[in-house]
Amino acid sequence: MSGGALLGCIADDFTGATDLANNLVREGMRTLQTIGVPDGGLDEPADAIVVALKSRTIPASDAVAQSLRALRWLRERGVRQVYFKVCSTFDSTPQGNIGPVTDALLDALGSDFTIACPAFPANQRSVYRGHLFVGDLLLSDSGMRHHPLTPMTDANLVRVLQAQTRRRVGLVPWEVVARGPAAIRERFEALRAQGIGIAIVDAIADEDLRRIGPALDGMPLVTAGSGIAIGLPQNWRARGLLGEAGADTLPAAAGARAIVSGSCSVATNAQVRDFLARGGTAFAVDPLALAQGRDLAAEALAALRPRLGERPVLAYATAEPQQVQAVQQQLGVERAGALVEQALARIAAGLVESGVRQLIVAGGETSGAVVQALGVRQLAIGPQIDPGVPWTAARTPRAGGDWLHLALKSGNFGGTGFFSDAFARLAP
Ligand code: ADP
Image (cartoon, rainbow, N blue to C red; front, side, top):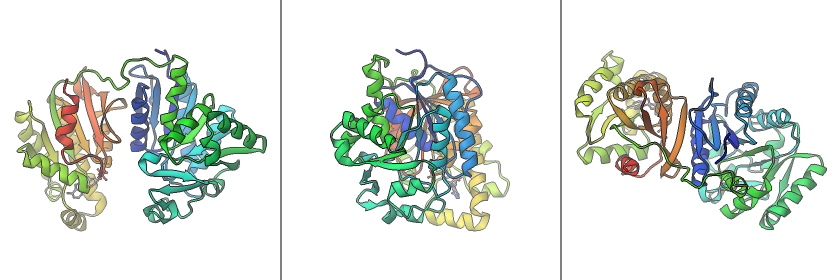
């Protein structure tokens, strides 16, 4: 087992960070995810660290500054390779932030070559001839063309990235990838000799990712989606630097169980309905009552605290689209969201203070608010519950000296029985 961390990752958003951490754990690396750049050191030893930033759509200069801060902190932890995790749909604009951040990280690392590869074929992201496909569609024909912040109207990643970087962008085509790591590495050298600084790499199946992995051994910076990560741990394992024990082992789970749900996605609505249908104890948070000044957090805690025990309890604002729209028309989208997030975060914090040690949070923004209210800064990544959603364990002042097990489920993730299945997954 290694002493320091091997791989240091900088992710441009929170759920992307978890997605990457989840892949690394599944491939045998003990992984810790941090929320922002920590002030101090690591809570737990880890083979890989993923620093989650929120830098995808902020001004490029801010994204560069935050990423360089993360890099400095990671280098202080001794990491031997740096991974800049970007979106699998390459979300960016001609101003950035993939190009400017990659440039800055290369400069800071004293390196002149990296790849940029968002491919993850198993998750419907493949790259062929430098063009990104989302399932059967070119990126530019997919829903991403209408994205409010980063509309992707060109599927040619060489062209997309070239508009954002001062380095020259090239391509490693699939027929080279198919020939394996030595051929890929040779092509890297040839491109570098031509003055190319960043190579888009084709990958149309997950085996391609495992062929690309060994060719990245020793490369100071890797810019990629979460897919490329499945090919990297083999490099450390080959050197005997990874332990044999399960990388997804978390401290034993104990204490009461609860769910806090602020997501109104189709999947979450089905999960809440399923929980209620099974007769679970629940408290509904009504945004209009909150707006009238009712202290629903206190009411929820008063109702749920006596029910904490064997079975999980639920506090939810989850509602069907018509109800959400009606609320938003009255309160405005932002005010409604903020009121609900604040109330759910207070409920979560109160539940943990009352003995909840296994907590599921449904909703991306809701998770952000809960994690902030709990003062959680680092998450040890454990076993996967459903694709992209792992159990994690964290320290929080609200839980005293105990570990808190947390599952942060954004939007449409998880099957209908997620709330029951997830706790079953933690049981010894
Ligand atoms: P998701 O991951 O599904 O997008 P989020 O938590 O990111 O979930 O976003 C859901 C947003 O909707 C949050 O800001 C939440 O506070 C808000 N919200 C939740 N319930 C309601 C409701 N009943 N009416 C209006 N807004 C709501």
